[in-house]
Structure formats: C-alpha cells, structure tokens
Length: 136
Image (cartoon, rainbow, N blue to C red):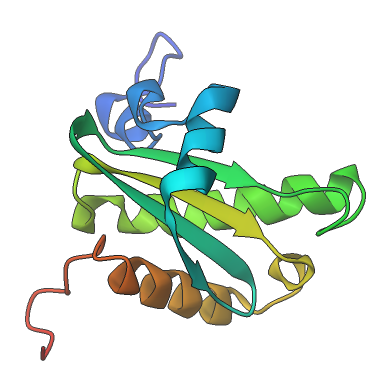
C-alpha cells in the first residue's frame, strides 16, 4: 500500500483506467460495432470509431462462443486490458472509441505476441504514438 492509512498512493491509483475512459453502456458497444472500422489480428479484433470532441473510451469483449467458459473470458479480457493499460500514455485521450474483441487464442498466446499484436492494431487504427526515438 502507498500510505500508512492503507489507501493506495496517487501513483498506484493512476495506473487504473479512469471510469470516463471505459465503455459502460450497451449503446456505446453497439455504436462502435456499427460505425467503426475493424482491424483484424490473430488474437483479437480492434474496432475503432472516431468521435471528435469526446473522450477516448475503451471496451473489451470476450464472448462465450468466441473464447469459452467464464474463466477463459475473464482471463482474455484481463490480458487485453493490461496490454492496453501499459500503452495508455501513448494513446490519444480524446476522439476515439476503441473496442477489443478477444479470440480464443488471447488466453494462451505468449504475452509478447499479444502485446505486439495489440500495438500493431492500435497503430493501424491511428491510436498509438510511436515510442520516443523509434524510427518512423
């Protein structure tokens, strides 16, 4: 814990994706799927939808049919969320709705493979700035 009172420190709390940056309603998910552009990968699908003037929001889907039982669905969502969270600082915080749909392989893929794919998909959607010092 970050302080003597047992509450997390500001640094620990800031690693979590803010509520305003999460898709929370069925309408958000449906609008993104209907109006967005799909970017396909081996472990997941990224649907991006430009929304100028709005805060960037992220959503994660792992269906029973596409991924499997509850344990696998939770694992797939958790792994994708973590990969995206680590790249949040390089993403625009306004103007996009991003929806990640997990495939069955998202639960068993090597972390580096999943991370590389998510980076590639985000870059294809125009939602990821290059690392400083990275060649363009």
